[in-house]
Image (cartoon, rainbow, N blue to C red):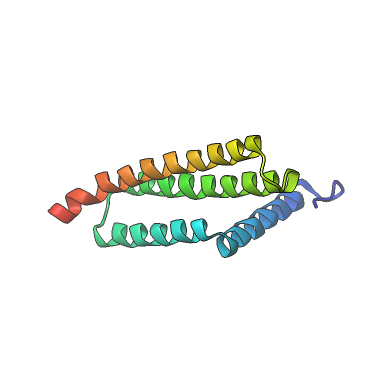
Length: 124
């Protein structure tokens, strides 16, 4: 927890520390995040191999960040839903499905970005 008596800078540093710990927990505990991170490493290596442009790097990094961030939000939604209502409930199921759907949409978009960037390079 941040302390109101600490300076603004110290509180920001603590907040970044909490966020970093959350990211580490997410990567260590969630299989879907591990898959996404593995794919991110692969396309990053491909980016160096094919020497993609600065614009392609920006779009690729944005797509990776979007998918991994949404995976994290999906996990948070699932965790809070399970905490609030541990047994099956139709509305909780709908909420989880909607969050997972958002990840799916971002993943499809990121896959299309990857295809647009890399298919021409493999065909060249």
